[in-house]
Length: 363
Image (cartoon, rainbow, N blue to C red; front, side, top):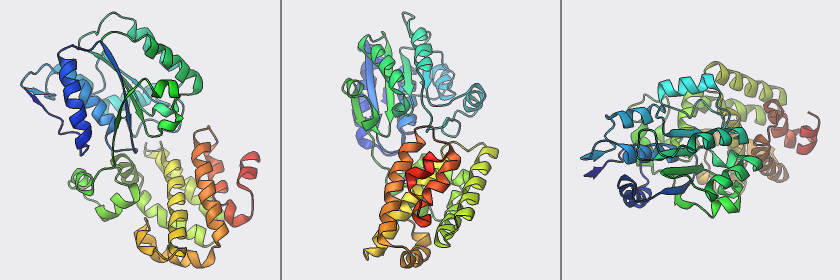
């Protein structure tokens, strides 16, 4: 008997924790369990959840998951009758395409909420006494922090009265957004940032137009974010956004943002791209602070170092502080269903003299 978790990159501690659990589940020695996978975005939490579902339900006893049996194939294509996925803003058309590709990340919006109706729909399926064809049913909640308050309370009732032969995996990047009553019930498994070696191995077969070292640095080693940066060509868009800031040109900044968002929509990669703009804005604020502090070697956007140094000569310390404050506020507003077109105006507030909140109130 051999457990095969090679598809999970890095995360050695996670694999060590999961091995005995998978063996117990394959032996059907646990009735139900609630797991919380928490850690940075795009480091393999969702992939790990699927690999556990495969390993537990795999029909092969020599090596599991084998990737060849009907159980593994159906789970890999997100079409297994005992696999239930909850995620933000996943309409039927996107779901069909995600199943066809066996990939979810580019098809759902990580900023949207998971509604109570979606929780109820899964609960109706779980009322059945036992799994349809596998050893266990798996409920995987992607971006668990996106359950609104009503959905979290409904989910809490599911945890209080667990369904038999059911594994629930809550995937979160921001555990602080989860109700303490839910958080306390979970068996928590922490995911770490990937090493450059693990990150680079994923992209070594892809013909990149830029240094993998740069890609690793500006995405903090997030494979999910890196894939989106590549698909939307955000690497090059960054320099144009920075130039608009340096030129104090809010109109050009807004036009670049709008063009980038529209490009994402046309290419089918729109989900999460506004967050990439906000994250880049935050990284620029941090880099400016470091340059002002005389520690240029620590900046994230190393390919834009000269431009950031030039901008630091024109920007005041109080404006940098305001950028940092706006970055934190914008990250919150993005998850509060604020219209995306407002964001470029808000990000430019430190350079126009307008108050950030006044910008939101005017829309």
